[in-house]
Length: 197
Image 1 (cartoon, rainbow, N blue to C red):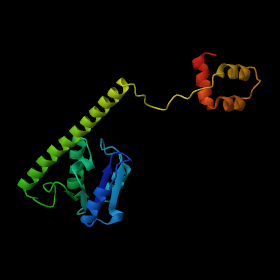
Image 2: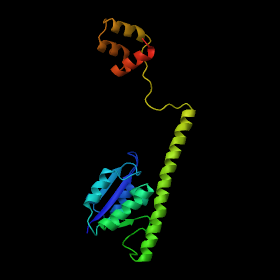
Image 3: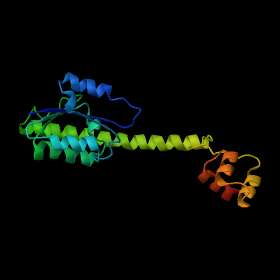
Image 4: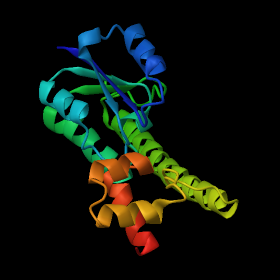
């Protein structure tokens, strides 16, 4: 029997330290802690897939909370079934003691764990939906305030049209024209089209 830990953070600017500390408290060896830095919307995550391939019947998996496993109600249910029933591992959700498959393996214990799993899976997916809604509302509000997203538009010099004409008449090489404008080749061509020169 081997002990594993799974850690997931949604974005690169989040930190996995709290989850890793929780794994260490459960004495999960560092080499057996798998970390993904991506959304929990599905299970197409490289480290998670690698971890599942390692599992053998009787192994133990720790996760800090159910939303670290995923944020899709149906897929959480499906993965839980695959891991516990088909592969035969035990799972312990550290912050929810009722979700520890080592306890209550009788009918009542299994029923309670399944019920708690369904509720928490629903909450995890609902939170993902709410996060996306808040993001889109925030973006809309920022746009309404005049906030621009993406790269700022690269300015060209006031004499851009003259530079383009010199370039078209072969008085300037492309490199010379780019140097005078201070822009990349793609920007040069795009701005040339915008000016309709």
